[in-house]
Image: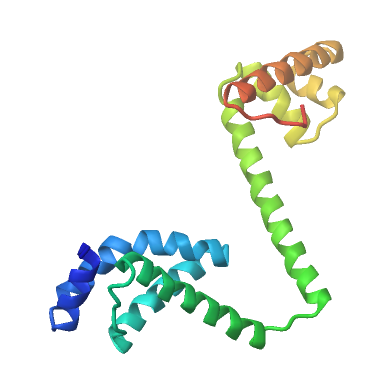
Length: 185
């Protein structure tokens, strides 16, 4: 008889610590298993909790025919299937609504990636020479043209062009050191 089965028997006999042990020992594995159904870790966590609630409330009889883990995961699977059936009946979205949700998810993901790219660029720029940081900042963030940048930095336009080229090359090397490939360079 494995530990889960003995813990469950103790729980059925009135020892609350038996259920605490079951939850402690099986919650992570059960949640990851349920995640394979839902593809959403938060939903899997809710289903895992519902599985344990079902044990506490309904107190189903454990059959020695299978291991405790197999029995528990079967209950979890049944909870997931029940949830899927309930959701399929209650949620009916039009094609346009589904597409809108997918577009929103993509735009959120793109915004996150762009934010990560900006952070990586700013971190890499901190490692550049002061002159390189200045020319990149004025040119790309302040969107000054080469003549305006030359006036601000008190350099010739040709010097600014060379400085931009060297600064971009240096920034690209810094980003590559971090394992980041920035396509804008």
